[in-house]
Structures are given as C-alpha cells and as structure tokens.
Length: 254
Ligand code: SAH
Image (cartoon, rainbow, N blue to C red; front, top):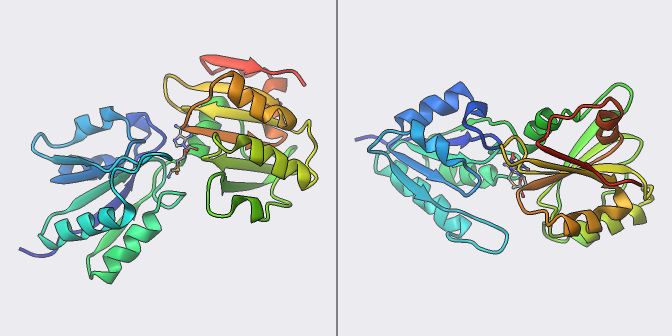
C-alpha cells in the first residue's frame, strides 16, 4: 500500500451548503476525517458510514490535542496508506494553522493538498450584507487575530480608519484591549463597528455600535466565540441602506 494524501479542507463558516463541491467530494470519500470544534455536525452526514471521525477540538481555553500531536497523527495515518481529510473551520490558511500542518506533511514526504473554504469574514459579510469593500467606504481590508503572541506590542496603526475595513478574528476575550489599542493609534471613538456572532449559521447575532463602546457591547450581550469584530464605515452603510437580514439585529446608538 502506498502513502496516502493529507487534504487540508476548508469547511466554511458553518452551514453545510457553504462547503465547496471539492470539499464535499473529499469528505464523502475519506476513510479518516480529523476535525475541530468549528465544524457543523451536519457536514459529517456527507461522510462514509464507515469513516473514522477524530475530533481534535480546540478552543482558547481547552486544547484536547496539542498541534504537534495533530501533525503527527495526520502524518502517521497517511504513511499507513490512508487518505486523510483534515477538516478545518473557514479557510485552512486563514488563522487555521494549515500552514503548519502542510509544512509537517512536506517534511515527512507526505503529499498534501489544500482545499480553500469560505473564511468567517466572507461568510459574515454575506450573511449580514456588510460589504468588506465598497467604492464609497473602503478600498482596503485587513484580517487580524485579536488573540495572539504579543498583542499589545503589535503595530496595528493604519489598519483601521477612513477608507479601511478591519476584520478581527478571535477578538471576543480581548475586546477591551482591542478598543483601547485602536483608539491609542488615533482611531475615532465613534468609528462604527459590528460584532457578528455565529456568522452564517441559524443562530447568528449582529450587534452594532461605536468603537469606544465595544467592551460594553460584548459584555452586555454576552457575546461568545465564534465571533468577528468588523470595524469601519462599511458596517454603518448597511444600516443606512436598511438591510435587515439577521434574525436578531441590534443597534447600539452612539
Ligand atoms: N480558519 C477560520 C478561522 C479560525 S480562527 C476561518 O477562515 O474562518 C477561529 C475564529 O474564527 C473564531 O474565534 C472567530 O473569530 C472566527 N469564526 C469562525 N467561524 C465563525 C463564525 N461562524 N462566525 C463568526 N466568527 C467565526
């Protein structure tokens, strides 16, 4: 038996119909699916009845399997001849550690393929009708991690402001530091933002407010991960034009 292939597959923001066709086909074929906590269980209905499903669920506070053990598991299974689908929320190469898993596979001489997915930012944009760019409001968009090594020393100057959209992943817990950091960099306290919890899923919540009120917004509504913070004029443009698609859409006045 030859060496198997490791497929790093993007599962999109949640709902099964936002998978790519390539992802769905690979999920349907795989004998082993290694997944994490951000994957909708409905997606597993596509798997073969005899497929092995292994959870390596990660959250900020709880690591059931450290990254090096995940890497070792993927490589060991592929070396045994199994095609392995490593299913990852959103896109594997946007804050997904897909890069580390791909490096590990290449170092072990195991073929690896990447299947892109709809990242949370794109899923949230579509579901809320907040465009990430807009000729009248923003021609730059940045994705940043709100929880990472050395957050306070990181230079975010210029990432947000007029004509720019900033999308923050993993920023719920650090919302107060994020607001403070951006205002210290000169961003206006009344810069509009939206917090999108469970984007593109039935339980989605969208909260709007000014930058200065971000910590209170998150606190008062008990926002939970997974959520994105979108900062910029584009978030106000959707209110101005009256789109109301979210099951719950709240506006915190300035
Ligand atoms: N690779 C993923 C991101 C993984 S990091 C992607 O491309 O989307 C995990 C973070 O993604 C979460 O903390 C949250 O900020 C964001 N996220 C993932 N799914 C989300 C969803 N359905 N709604 C809002 N944010 C989401």
